[in-house]
Amino acid sequence: MGQKKSQKSWKIIGSLWVCALAVASGCFWYGNTQTARTKPTNAANAEAVPVLQYVSWGTYGDLVRQTQQRLQDLGYDVGTVDGIFGTRTYEAIRKFQQDQGMKVDGIAGNDTLERLGISIGSGTSGVGESGESDYDEDLYLLASIIHGEARGEPYEGQVAVGAVVLNRVASPDFPNTIAEVIFQPGAFDAVEDQQFYLTPNETALNAARDALNGWDPTNGALYYWNPGTATRRWIWSVPITTTIGRHVFGVK
View (cartoon, rainbow, N blue to C red):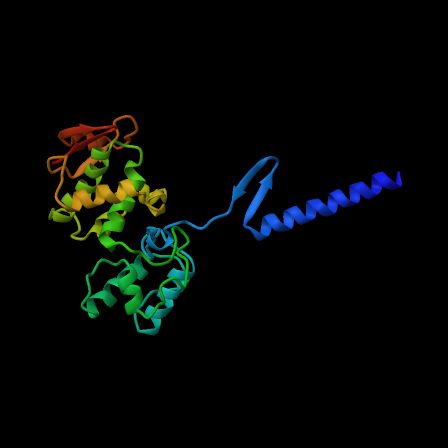
């Protein structure tokens, strides 16, 4: 018994040494399988995760509260500083942007937040992330609505959704900025159900680039809908110009 116990003890000690050596070498052992923990070989050139920080319709939390407080400190009427984006916050941002000679869209993106003196990455929006983006703001907004509205659609169909947004920007019947078109109340389901705030994938970013570069597979459409799920009767009065994937596109 004493000999067996001693052998067992040495086995335990030996196993501990093996584990210690494995950890020191950055490896982990699972049965007979060895998995090495290694750094990416090209970490310096790895593409940054695109993250945009903004305060807009549907957002809430610390970042909204910071924005409201800063606007109030500067003399803009935001009503109650409650961390919830509403009409008065929207109007206050627009007035601030106008006074600063900025693009007036009522959306506090990176530029507006920096002009307000709010450090990028110092708060959270409640839906979506906070941080820095390597992408142009309009590109990222367009990619976000494409990802939220047309994820899983054919690539051409994703470009088509981006084209509809841009066609609205160019139309006198809609707001004249990408942000205002996207955040127009009731305009897009993805904003309402917060799918818009998911991080867009590379396909959506590429589709947004193609749309911004002038590709319009919709022939000028201002509307699109899924015939299988559409619940608004008026949409069927819009003449259809094309069908791509599960969406039909049309223009009045």
